[in-house]
Length: 195
Ligand code: GDP
Image (cartoon, rainbow, N blue to C red; front, side):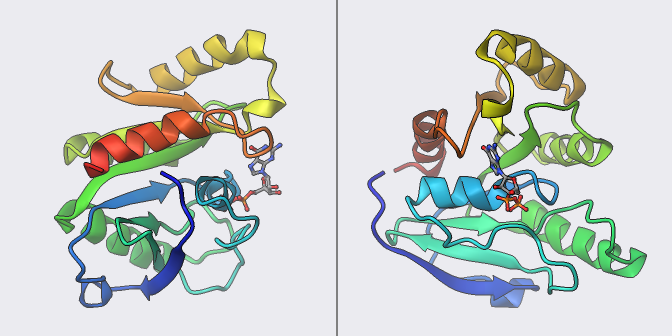
């Protein structure tokens, strides 16, 4: 999609605040610092529209970005942030679960992992959860510029295996630096959002 217009329309903590436009939604999730804001900014051709790097103490909200009035990107707050208290983490979990399990306009989730490392326990939990609810998932392995191309296949196999991905689960290596993978990710989004 050729993106010119993007607007952050809502930062929501509860279903009553979700937009009511009824247009398709694609959510993006991943642990803090995985490169989620950088991916969103790349997809919408902006340098710093989505905030980069999660700030401690900041309210954890679901951010709805209206893209060309055709779909929402839903930025799911990063998980695994060490300084967040247990109570806050539980609240976070509940908010995300409610959204993912009940949102009828949700068409798919882009689950981000770091291309360099084995997925974390929380990465595994997130993908298990998406499988359980039968939500289409695209795993995007970020920061691919930090590994040599010769090693891409090896890293893909390790990530696919540890996340128990099925052949139906799509996987893309992405770099915000050289933008590789961007087109493939857009194709997945357009297909699942029915654009
Ligand atoms: P978020 O917390 O998941 O939103 O992560 P950010 O997008 O803020 O990125 C976290 C850090 O990783 C920042 O310092 C980014 O510059 C860096 N980063 C993000 N994506 C890439 C990438 O594709 N390649 C490289 N080399 N660095 C990246």
